[in-house]
Length: 86
Image 1 (cartoon, rainbow, N blue to C red):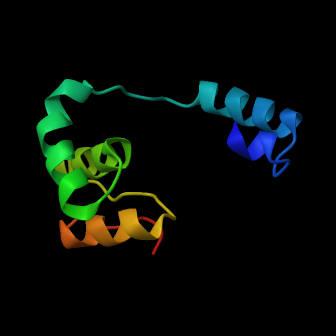
Image 2: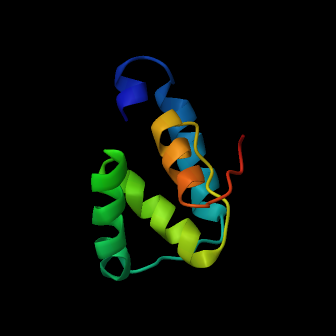
Image 3: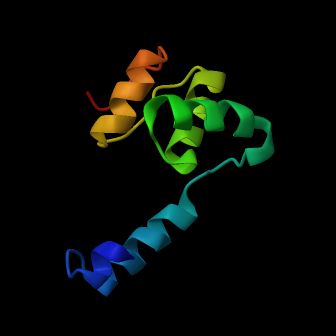
């Protein structure tokens, strides 16, 4: 929503994205199972717990992480997590 507020994307583009996202097959994972690891990663790499959760989940599932965030990318690589966009 911050991109919409900053006029980087139009409301119609956000709506279209949400429609496409709603059609995707998704899975949910309990955050509590990854909190300890995420807090440790957050402290180690000065990330938000939110960003660290993605690294912890990717590591646990053995999947690459898709991110364009430099700090998160560096932390993921340091933790042995492959990057989808590198």
